[in-house]
Length: 318
Image 1 (tube, one colour):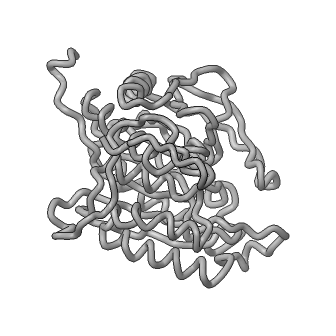
Image 2 (image 1 turned 90 degrees about the horizontal axis):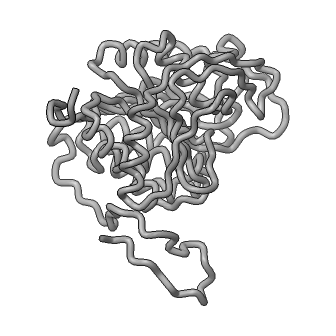
């Protein structure tokens, strides 16, 4: 189909899912893990009932250092073991990626000033979070997927631009996509062995912050959560500063116009694990206002972690 014949693509909705494989590999060791496994089935049924023809994942478990990587192997197959939980066993995966979309995403990211590249070679280590999410949400590979990495050094502005580039690619490709953020909420793990049956959130403070974020997400206030995420991360050790939320909010439109559903919230080795769905619902956000700058292009490192003596800044507000 020619570009002229394609209808503009759209993002049908988004989901936040845990980044650890316990619900897939050991659900019956903990009542909370079993609850997550059952809740995954509800999310999977929603996705299957949608008209989606693409899943786009941003996983905090796929860490990149220089720029942003996008999986472009059309049929990756290999084995992976969780680096923290070897005893859970080996995960064999055989996935279906949309290589054409991956290249479109790379191009759109480059247009917005980001350093991005596709990766496609046998044995590339696809991360545990993405493998678990796809096996639970798309077990028969009915819907092709695309996975993008989480750059450990990217700030909020850069991550927002990466999310906007995802939306650019969806529109350009004509896809009907669902975005999936693979991430924990609070991310403090127990450092000594615990009985899985007694798993719980690492601290009361983490639990309270998790529940506040989930309350906002259930109200459909995705942009509010995106803007609150830095304070959340300071208070509750948010997973990768909740970059998955930044990315999702930018890709989905940076507003609060959603119908939110919290399918589940449990502890996984002390961390906050939640399954949340967000479906666009125009007007749901009412007159809520936002007070942060909005970057459309990436203009390079803004020295956000430089010393106070270094006052050189790069304007990223254009």
